[in-house]
Structures are given as structure tokens and as C-alpha cells.
Image (cartoon, rainbow, N blue to C red; front, side, top):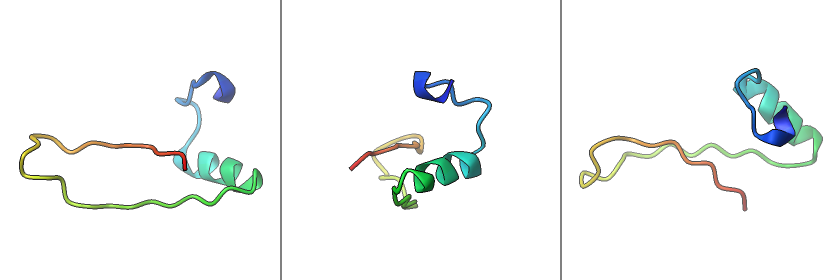
Length: 47
């Protein structure tokens, strides 16, 4: 399910541990949204 993008059954903690097990660092950055945008967003960026 995870490889098909079906993430509902996976907690964020479980996803982070899975990525760490694959030797990947997980970084979470929290910042204020621009005033020009009405709603805040959640983005995932793979570097």
C-alpha cells in the first residue's frame, strides 16, 4: 500500500521510521504562510 501512495493506514511516526530505515534523513520545517495566500498548506519535498 505504501508504494502505491496509499498512506491512510500509516502514522507520520511510522512513515518517518520507514524513511530512516532506508537511510534517509527527515526534516520538518514550519514557517508562517505569506499574507498573499489565504490558507496554509502542507508540502512534501524530496531532495
